[in-house]
Image (cartoon, rainbow, N blue to C red):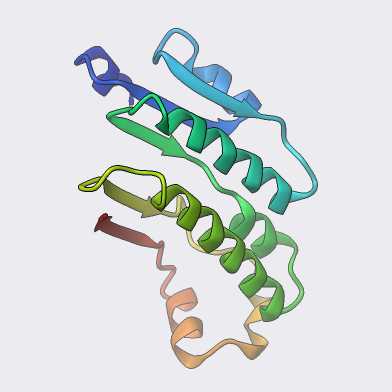
Length: 143
């Protein structure tokens, strides 16, 4: 982000408020959302700010959605994990609908999912194997 900004690219970040402060003086546009126990609402606010940031047509935009991470720490069932994944999917859809054609996306996790002992009981064989292999999601696509 900082390198892109120094190279003359428009860089923007939409993350948790405290983390956003680390961008002060390093990139021009950063948006901070106060942390919240209601992580679904938090991610919705992150998405709203991302849509605002997209109006300025940044060359690079970092968006930190946290529902899946929070649920992996606290969920007791696989159903709860799916709720978090569906929430992330809905937020990404809103972002995808508001970008220019040709936009490249890198969607990734920053670590493998936590807390599997609780919610893996009803996961598929593939999901269990992925968890055991400590896979971290990375999706690259172009709209």
